[in-house]
Image (cartoon, rainbow, N blue to C red; front, side):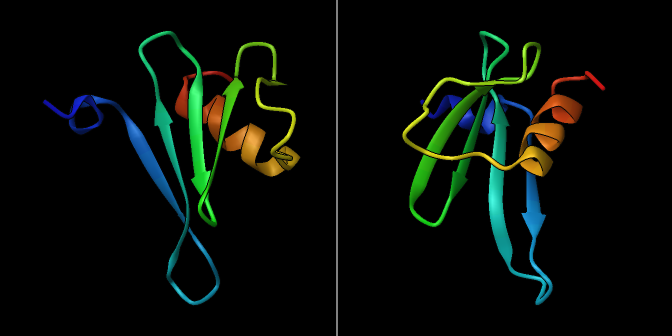
Length: 71
């Protein structure tokens, strides 16, 4: 069973209308951000990147926080 089907997610589009990033709210409250074949996990409550080897721009952190219900 693919749990991703049941998790809240959002897709961000680039200026051409193509999906550039997919954000998924995980069961533990973290958010997975997938883009360009890479994956980052962030904690939207603390705005901390849990995968420091994958840089996450502030606008993506804000989107993750919004998905998780934060501000």
